[in-house]
Image 1 (tube, one colour):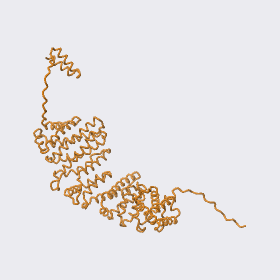
Image 2 (spheres, helix red, strand yellow):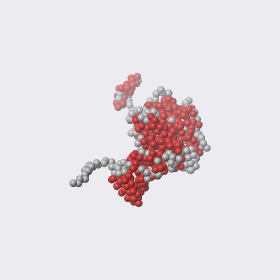
Image 3 (cartoon, one colour):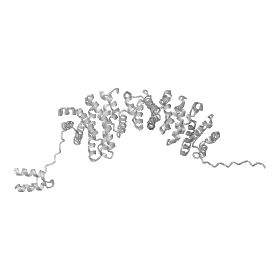
Image 4 (cartoon, helix red, strand yellow):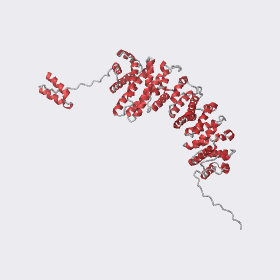
Length: 581
């Protein structure tokens, strides 16, 4: 039958698939081969027996990929399929998951766990090459396979970790790979948000990474040490993970995701008043790595900084025996002082705006600390430290002198106002008052800032008003009062307190020895009438005090209340007396 085999070879090469049946029938007829179409009964369907798990084949796939010089899309999909079947086999024996080690030793000479860790490292290197890959249908399929392969391997290692004896170098490699995978998956998600398949795989992978870290950092029975010797290196590795992502467009993602991972990794404080042993142990770990925390916190956004610091301060507990809250506040004040010294020494015209913006970030972080995180006793301890507040006063003076008062600066001043009970440094009250007046003009709501001013008003001898530029101070008061009238709405619950404070400030101005030195810029007669009507409406008992104060100020200098745009009237013609005849 050599002719028949030759014809079949031609059939497999030259004949289209949809014509192959007709061609074969004609070929058989030409060779006088009869085709019998006997109808035979079909055999009964026998249920298929499940194939035995073939771990050796899955490991051989992974080992073969590791021997490749370069990873490609086909290798990624093969690893994804093999890792999926290995994970399924591990889950099928939850009572004895360590049995997979025996089978792996019988089927392959390589260590099962070390092979998984090495595959993670190779896949991570391949992921780095895909970061600049444009999103599309083809790329999303490869990326999804890659993310699922990560998930399968990490979950497998997480399940087998309690039964595996991983050497320290391999454990460090596992921790490092998991950190970078956690951050890289968010970068890939950021660039492929329109691909639902990638989005879902990325979320699952991040949860698996966190689960691995929690398994790796489990404590022993006494909750005084980690179960795994290399686990004490997890926190430093996570803290330094963001430094490996140097691209400017992804730096903010790597920094923020490092903070997110730390927030998920460090356990939440217990609800009981007494700290548990586990809480004490983790607190020791945080304190041991405070320099690395400081480096990360210096580049975090305000939102992630507040979340992470709040977590760490609450971990310290209500007693605050370690004093993490004070440490973060003093550290940020030190950063602000260092920046302020640069502003005074070498600040050029181009650098000044950038420096003031960075200073405003530190001020915003301090405001978040005092508003949401620190307790009253901690704030009082900080404010009563004379050297600390002297440094802060110096920084605040530079900001005020450069007219860089922002909403954050005004908010911090309002938070500090109730705690300023000492007369040293003497300039602090004046600077806080000026900050509140200027901040009320830029803040979305000026009312909380006006409520904070009266508690700073003390006799001029203590306030040292004469040490100020009274011309500028009067302009600050006048412009802030005009802005308050312009933004006033009758829906305020504390209207009485606000306008009582306005009257008190005007009374305080009249207590100055030389009232004529104060000049309220930006206020005209219309504004005065608006202020008087609001005072009469909300604090009628103080209307006489307002009239007396406003009259005294205006009598000392008729131009105290200056119009913003004065209308110059023509001078009247001078009349000469008639001479007698």
